[in-house]
Image (cartoon, rainbow, N blue to C red; front, side, top):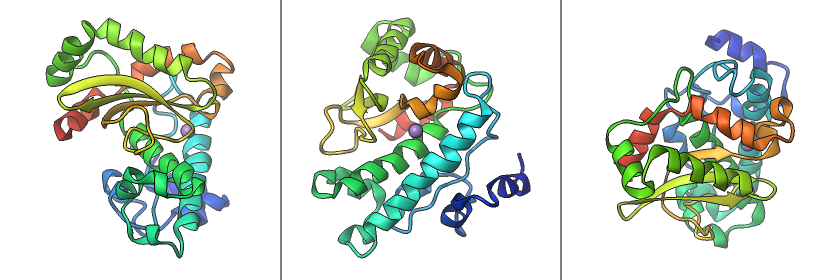
Length: 236
Ligand code: MN
């Protein structure tokens, strides 16, 4: 999908008003996470259909165009006129215990989805190489063991939430967070620099997989962007 088609897809939706700011078509989304309000949704780095068959086009359209867009709009509404308006999203998350629930839920929602889109990609998957492969083997014994543990974190998160692979103090760990919490938040059980994330909210998979969350998790491995995970590890 080119930019024109993308705009056409959005035309007529309330999303178009909230998200099509001047910077929404910035080249990468990473910058959006250190910006201050008004927060903007970066473009999806690939077409809505690009992750098929692992993640279907309609799920991606609704997930990115409605769910993620709503988190951004609601976050902007929530910070308006508050001291959070002049803080970067990452700074807000670090002291999220001091923020109202609307900022926690929607700030986490914006950060998590921006991160999630980037750790996936078309024609990806396979096994990590180099430093990521070494770190995974050192921590979990093997890539297969790592996948088992990560899948378990996603499958056993009750209700809505996220599974994470994070780095902290030179070590990797796996965990999950409820709702839109993430490992950058001071309230999180699992803390560290996120390397990989998986959205296990029903909205992320229900259209195609219904109640079969483990099938969605299995298909996720075919779209993991290990190059992006390697970049994340380098910054950790
Ligand atoms: Mn989601």
